[in-house]
Image (tube, rainbow, N blue to C red; front, side):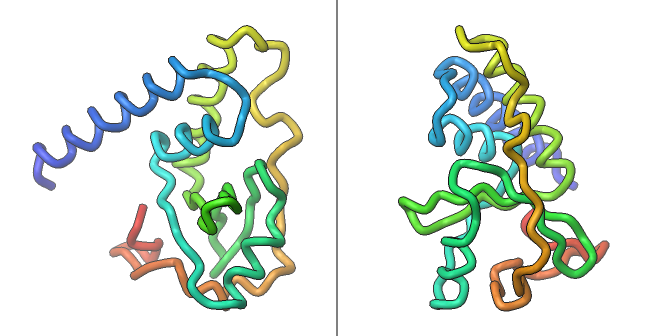
Amino acid sequence: MNPIPTAFKVLTTLALAALAVGCASNNLLDKENVAGAAGFKVITPTKPDQQALLRKLPADKVTRIVHGGKPYYLLPDLANNQAYVGGPKQYQAYQQLRRTQLKNSKNNESSPDSGQMVEINAMNWGEWGGWGPMGEMGEPGWY
């Protein structure tokens, strides 16, 4: 692994996290900023079936799904016809960044996304087709 790209990714993530924390409020844009900083990748549906699945996701909430026996976490951005997708590591980073964001905001009375993560396994996620190439360990290649 080349240390320069890795260091660049780490610095970019920290910069995005600082930006997300500095602009703390509890709206979708902040959640998207945090999702990006946590390593979530943006996927855009291109087929009608994929777009229908995206519209079925609860807006402004992280949804846990299982595809191919592995958990994934999706945050839909319906206005831009896309979703932020990550695995368990990215979701843990997302939760931690949201906690920090909310702690630094004036509205720190609740934990981040408490009760806002839902799980949907009944949908046909194989139709999505947007999971990307498989990595060395069988995980999607984008995280």
